[in-house]
Image 1: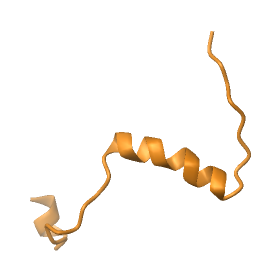
Image 2 (image 1 turned 60 degrees about the horizontal axis):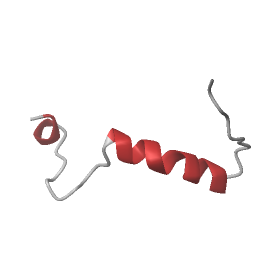
Image 3 (image 1 turned 60 degrees about the vertical axis):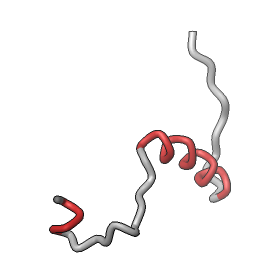
Image 4 (image 1 turned 45 degrees about the horizontal axis):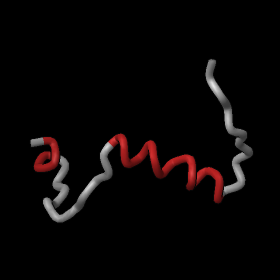
Length: 41
């Protein structure tokens, strides 16, 4: 229903939240965002 109201065709796909969570750090890294690995505990 939201898709129809926004006139977004069914052929357009959107990533899921888990897919975004996997892709975002890699994209940020390629853009030069400084990162370090952390460890909980």
